[in-house]
Length: 358
Image 1 (cartoon, one colour):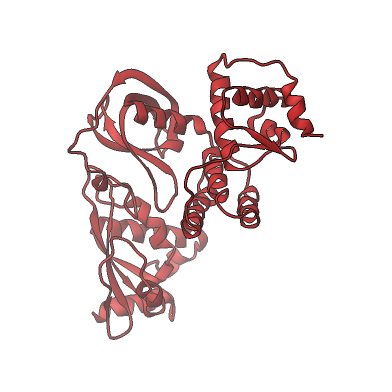
Image 2 (spheres, rainbow, N blue to C red):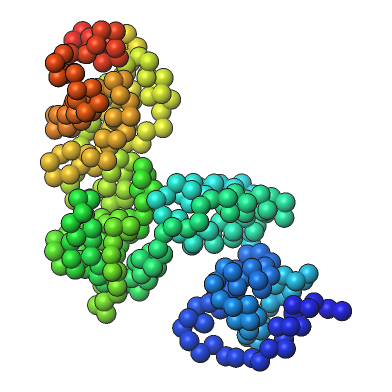
């Protein structure tokens, strides 16, 4: 009897790759067939092409000697490469799945890697891991910027793009020699660091989801041997870069101390525990030119009245102003009572009492 899908494929006229788009699809098809068996219909849906196009591509790969096999209606390529261990697969899959679920843009490349990792486990476990990805929202990201950045880095070609600042204004015509790609720890946004040669002539970090009209220039560059990636990786609370990080000194109330003492905060000092149970802690955070680590602020505000910013003074002023604005916005009567006077018995009053006592 044989396999009907394979017979149907072999009956089609053979074509040689003749366009960059088809060549790229063949490359993806070969890689995907090494991950797991798939039907022609599944592959056609994955690539957004007609069924006959996929069948011709399968025939082309067979003609090129890529080792395509078909069983029970599913095509695959046996992959002789050594597999990762089960613990390695689960660890890598969990880390990448976190990025896929929580990042502001879900990229098809992440999905492809997740399936590759799952493909190294037994069928039952592979099915569970694949289901954990397919249950996520449909990809919302545009991978063209990521692909352009990756090509710029691989080929050492200058990247040109416009950049949308947080306030909405657009910085036109940046030209970047890409040195490093990183993921921001708190926002999970992809970021790239390199030498911006047109406006600043300095090392800068840009978020990919704020880039617009990314394109490659013919100009080539070399990454200096003096470039140290560790000095420019995203730190725990913001972007590392030309501006030195600042030391942020915090004091937590006793009812929040347990979370601080559990640890897990990078660039943090050893906690200082006071007799009343409050805890003092220093953090290193990337800051802007004014010395304010803006990307740390949402985390600080999430503690409410259970934390006090002691240093640096610019951050303390900014933090207090945010708290006062929140009170005035949602409790207009607070201005009559006095915004600097916490209500009796509140966490803010306890925090104030602790500070006055020391």
